Image 1 (cartoon, rainbow, N blue to C red):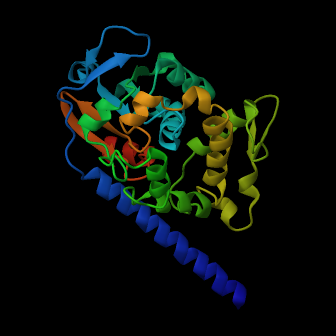
Image 2 (cartoon, helix red, strand yellow; image 1 turned 180 degrees about the vertical axis):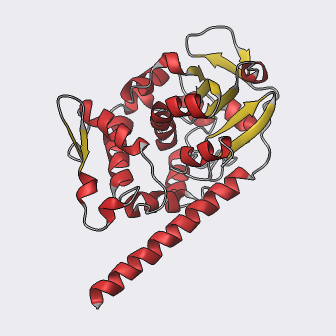
Image 3 (tube, helix red, strand yellow; image 1 turned 60 degrees about the vertical axis):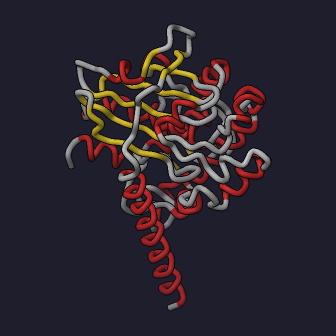
Length: 304
């Protein structure tokens, strides 16, 4: 009887987290309409700056543009990890033929991040914006106390981890531990595999054979192993990213003094999809680890 009560409690908690996640998606999807006017992008390779409005013009299909964060940030890492997995699907099934990404960092940091997650530069047009001006003009959330220059930015960041100025942080983080019995997130396994191949710890979540076949040990969990997203699976990836990317590569990925003064440490990200000059999908992160759910994006782009 006690076991049944525990299982029922776990079920209710999972349903609650799932409801909060849907609230996050609904809130961010109906936020202030995006503005691209005046946004100018600097290519990673140092080429001629490009107005975003001009870049989004795409006679061959739809354009996806991601406003990332600073290179060591969870949101930037997860955007790039998800892009790596979903790009083929977006291009094959959703009419996306142009993909751009701006990161709030220097070119060297952007290159390091792309390398750590194995995202091919030929698949994405990458831009750098060290002070995050593009995201600010787009209207991304700027975190806790963005205009209080007298408060240390790292104190602001700690506050955001508890939901201050970033209300969706805790639901997003807790969801990584509890899992989700309804919505799959196949990008997680792909990102874990990249991390293991590069020697990042934890390195025991997957068994990768010589021919590339992957066995996910989370599938072996009793009862919850059949869930589309198993408990602890996303939390394990985030631990791997924190230790093996954010902390290990901090000197290469961290924001410099100019970026810190501009507030990029607490600035969140977002994305948009355009077609024939019109925005057909947009998202603004409402918290740390609360980036766009690409599964939801794909369904909306496919009209489901």
